[in-house]
Image (cartoon, rainbow, N blue to C red; front, side):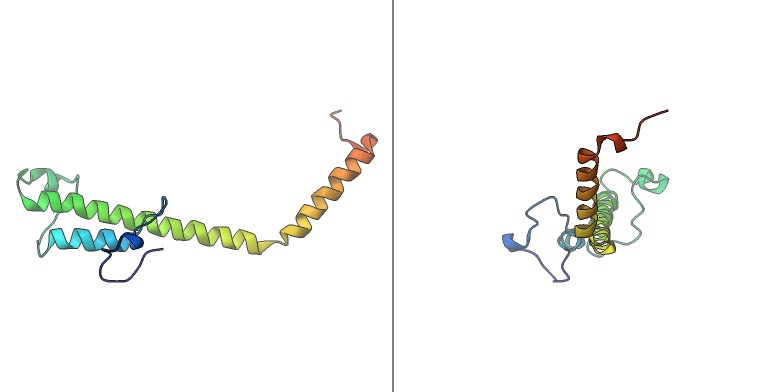
Length: 117
């Protein structure tokens, strides 16, 4: 999903769906934050204490966006892996066959339908 290349300027590298790619966001943010030191976590008292024109305040917001993009990409990868794990966990063709047989049995044997007592 994400790439480890150093830049993503080619439009073909951009996600074409709701996919979130962390690396291009990281590069974008890093180019703007540069060598700023002591960037507080956004929304903390230290962040609120910064003057609105302090470049570290904006850098903290950019850094927060970068962390959010990382979280989204990692969640995407985890969901994709979970999907593969579920698909591999069972012989789904056999499960479908079993359900079809059960449905056919119930259709051909209405007396076997469960009822509340």
